[in-house]
Length: 281
Image (tube, rainbow, N blue to C red; front, side, top):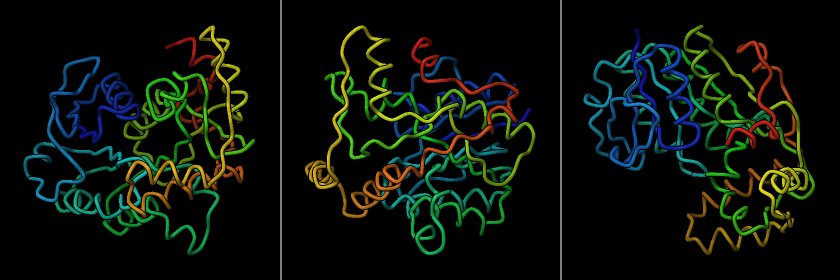
């Protein structure tokens, strides 16, 4: 059976991808900045990989690796600069198949506006590398409200985001991981928009969270200026601030609201709804 290297295996996308690959019979090598901190459901081989490290030993990282699932640092305005080295290393070592987790909002852009986006630059690097590849353009993860970026706001009882009343086709990380594993099984190539079964606004999300948690979760839209101030207060680089603003502008313009039947076509079942996801956690 083929051996798959999964980067950023400690995140929602990574953990679910590792689980799905194991269920399909793949051997898995999971990576993290510090492998000792990885918490996975099953024992797998682990290796250190940090996209910020410019001295990675790629011979060690890619030893006996057949395929790669590449998950980049989230909301990083310089992700294209950080992932170039691992893409080149994969091509130099004749990796058989590379699946890259991209973003569904790319589908709303065209021309120079698309080309200038950091994760599109990563996609183009992969295309130009000659690697057999799959771009998994996933929607925003439902999981982020429980264990990710939005979880602290949910814990406080108020979601504050600069997305207005726009809707998004939130997707369960379990569905994305299952899709990636099946893409490697079937040898699927090209771009795939992977979404949940419905588009929800954050008032609807807050209502579903309230029903599930038994306490009130509210949603308060904030302005782009407030979001900018919050980003800057965290000391984020200007490129990353602009990347985040671009993403949420796309969200506000309903660029992430499209619902596809990709999960149904490839996995043979309906994607997990937000209500179902909350019952599973």
